[in-house]
Length: 143
Length: 125
View 1 (cartoon, rainbow over the protein chains, first blue to last red):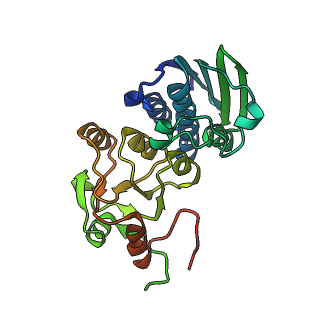
View 2 (tube, chains in turn purple, blue):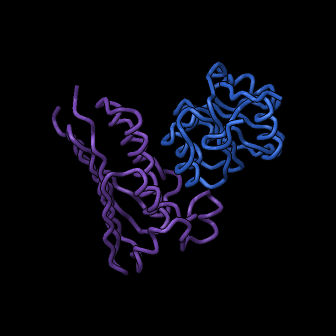
């Protein structure tokens, strides 16, 4: 099958549409016939990454590439950056304000959840400039 | 009290909890295999499993998005916490039934457990 590529643009603090990009991505994966358990993993990781942009950044974008072998997602944002990535990868570590926690997020599970659901994950961040989160999921060989 | 984990029909859950259906009345025949309760959506994303029931006190649109990506079958809102019309419309669009009960989180979980429903990753007894 031909590769599928695309991009979604994300706006910081746009909670009304938070999750819409991940939802659309899920639909694209379903359209390509990706196995449901893998779709679930991708959708969860993408949603966590999308929420991070909505919560912390001014804006960002989610690029996706789907091949026969893998699904690759790159989320770049213009945000505050992460001073200590190792710390941010720990479950329960969060700098989210209370109003974010009241919405059910910001409990320090975002990056750990992405890691849990992906086969590769890289996080690059520059304080004051932004963060790039890139992850991929391998697809089983076509029958 | 039943000791065997059982699959429940959504209409049974509605009746047990004396719940009102806010979205997808036509889907009350859906099967529920497991339940997960939380107000932290990241916990739902981390620990729930597919085809389960989400019991929560949160009513914003992110709950629907969370349910969608985590392939949650249906949502029960506790203590008569009702989502706004946009949230109900999103659930309807995503085909996720919404129910609301007057019961507390504890009583909601307790009643469903007593009837045989089990958690996504918990005890099997």
